[in-house]
Amino acid sequence: MTTATFPASRSKTIILWSLRILMATLFLFASFMKLTGKPDMVAEFDTIGLGQWFRYLTGLLEVIGGIGILVPPVSVFAAILLLAVDAGAFFAQIAVLHMDWIHTIVIGAILGTVVYLQSHQLSRV
Image (cartoon, rainbow, N blue to C red; front, top):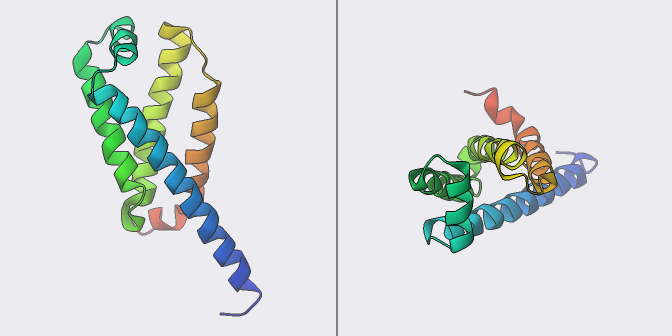
């Protein structure tokens, strides 16, 4: 390894871990809100109209993704899972809930960056 590539590699590692931790924290908090039945979450999923089982499924997917994104060998797949959950939230915000949807775009961009930074793992599959 040359000294010229070391700083870029180290910077990439620091950025990647920072984004992983940020996304893990966000999604684990969101899953806690859903799985513990916070009234706001129950009301949102009532409005969506798919039933409370969908709240539990979403919370479970967020737990799996939130933990998985911190495990390097599966992090890229967890980020893709969370990106799918985020896309669902985007469409729910736009089509049904009519609430702020900008945060879903920001989260999607961060998750997309995490996937991009680890895209070399996808070629091994």
